[in-house]
Image 1 (cartoon, rainbow, N blue to C red):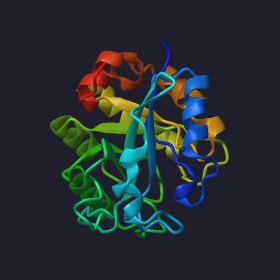
Image 2: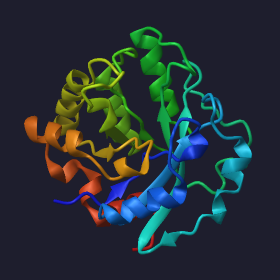
Image 3: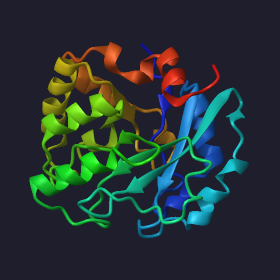
Amino acid sequence: MKALIDLHTHAIDSGHAYSTVKENIEYAEINGLKYYGLSDHGVDMPGGPHEFYFHNIKVIPKEVNGVRVLKGMEANIIDYDGNLDIYDGNTTKHLDYLIASLHTVCLEPGTKEENTRATLNAMDKDKVKIIGHPDDGRYPIDYESIVKKAKEKNILLEVNNSSLNPNSFRPNARENYKEMLKLCKDQGVRIIFGSDAHICYQVGKFENAEKLIEEVDFPKELVINYHEDEIVEFFGLDK
């Protein structure tokens, strides 16, 4: 099966990525994606964009060279109550989705209970459709609670291809994903692959994630990247 969508990508406005939006979309096309999502970091990320960047994101076309373009943000969870770095009500007006993620530069890792509460509460925020890289061993979380809430709220849990790189700075990602994927499989909870691309050549690349789900015999029926009808329905798109 061929993955059709990548929603976790960064352009130069994230402050530590190296390609333009145009370059990312071009490589989405080259790598066979039908749906591409731009999810630059929220404003609390060092070097990240001002909120005005997201106010004006509507200027990006909805389709470029046959690739449907979704506009998003990887919002930072900024406290253990699950609040996000979105301070202006207009910031999400033109966004199709939010990825909510924990980053050490925005929130120090807490206890397992604190990290879990932060993640669960972030799922209640408007337009949060994906929990980004819930794999970071620096943030121990209760996967049973996370998977249960994801099922209740119809939120996608990400398997982050970058986290599974041999040189990844997120410890124990593989082991944590194995635990999470077993629970998702048992409870019928969908996941989404994300490249977490910080340069255009990584867009739509999921080799690590695909290898892992093969290893643990995770059903491809629960991987939304492979199913266009589910993508269209979940994100409210015109096919």
